[in-house]
Image (cartoon, rainbow, N blue to C red; front, side, top):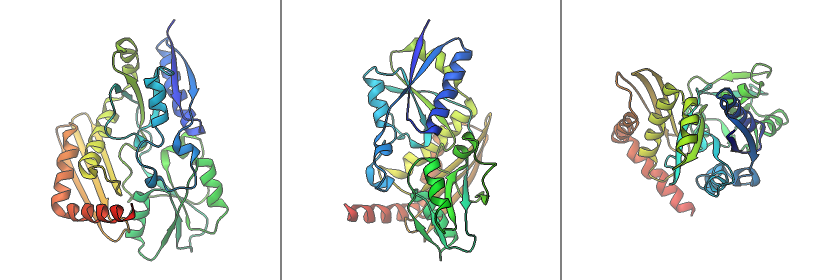
Length: 301
């Protein structure tokens, strides 16, 4: 019998996601075991995420995959660079969880919000220009403990992570931030494999959820066309039902003083929509925002 080694990070959330893949494969008659691998993002907790480059939560898993130590790697898709390096391939996107963000709050009167995300920080400060932001790193449980131990307004979390850990309904002071545009592919679980493993790829492909996969492809195409190798506060949310697409994209300046949003629909679902809408946003003033971000980040180097 085929026994698949699934590479995963060691956090409770990552293990939940890997076990979902393990369970789905078991339903197909495929045996699988989990192989826990520590990533750079897990080891280093005292630096902002954006200062450590791309792939901080994925590169160690990618290396294990390429080395043959694991057969597939399971990722939170929002952590995965938009372009996979050969010989890696995206094999399946599971049905998406909750895509949005929530504020877990302690003090509604406070003007301090905690987040390690430049996207969440920028969107929050645009909406609340008199507030301030403090950094927040660590796994979900660690961040919740920090929020509960500080007199902040609250910390911002992905709703999917809290929901998957069974925490969302039991927490006090939870506010769903319906106005905040999530990170591209937030709430999506990606399974990555290697070229040349056609037998295994065929099995894993049964786990793919077409609408979720298309939504993620549109959002990541939007991100790729905007970023150009520069980390920026970018949000994207595509809702796909067959061929119908509803899309919201958002770009902020790093300080949250500027924001551009675009809302579009299409009756033809294809990944190139994301790039088309990104170029439209750039022409509407997004290019000036991106130029400002590049100038600022280059000055920090």
